[in-house]
Length: 364
Image 1 (tube, rainbow, N blue to C red):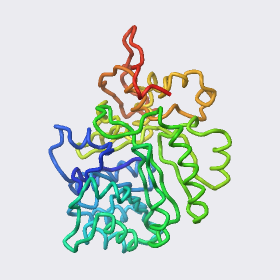
Image 2: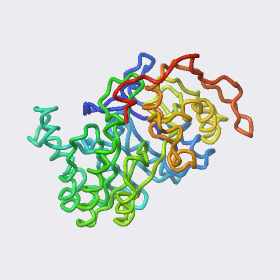
Image 3: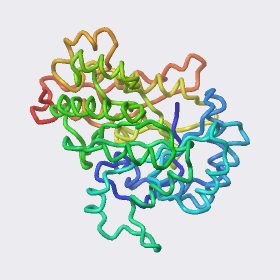
Image 4: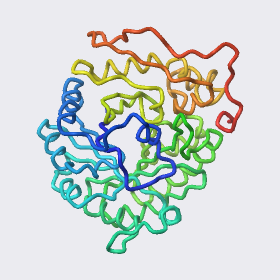
């Protein structure tokens, strides 16, 4: 899996946005990916054996040549996956509508409408529609191509409004739940690990209501096994929820041609995308360089947790783990040798005597 950033601009200002560290960086010199660079990205997907073109931003559909990029990706026989806020320009929306549902998946991230109106009191279109109404209209037009995503960035979240939205718009009967994770700068809104257990209980209650409405709950990355009691996990499994504990190098390819582990870890630096590098080699390089932090986990108890020891749970979001420690950016070097091993053996190291921070983020 790899994501291609094609836009550095967005028409929303979500408080939990985890792309801010990267997209607001001083090194960005362009707002949109040009077509030649997009072809190079498709070459990268081809040699990596990846059959999806996963497009994100910013808001990817704001790219002025979005239909042309989709045409190029489809010419390579790629399935299109778009991560969007649903405020899609007319030409881009018409392009997505024209694709077969089997070749197109659009994850529409939706915030709670009450909080959205507080954040953006004047966020209406020329036709007088609110942001939420525009998102619903987009989902309705995309139909089964669309799936709803919801990011949890505060413990008092209320996702029940999604169930009538799904019923009324005819999109896929599923909700992709994400935990808002911190950027390394900590400047975005996110949930603290000590809030996870309470959040887990609310997820189970929502999953029951969703199952009654024939809607499936799916987990994005960063969830941890200890959020849920054994009985609650059995309930989720019985309800058909897609439960998973994963935190891997996603490989986000930026506008500048640098590949990063994932957006929350963008401040760690990246690897240049060359005509030789492929996704497996890049992924191994990032795994090697982050291994010292991965051994820790978001809680101090992670080091003795049987779920982590057995590989069932990776220990939660790596960005949240690294914010427990005093960390500094480090360079990642990867060559194009067939075995994909990194050319440099340097690794991030904790300074002697440095202990995890005693903060809300570290507290269970």
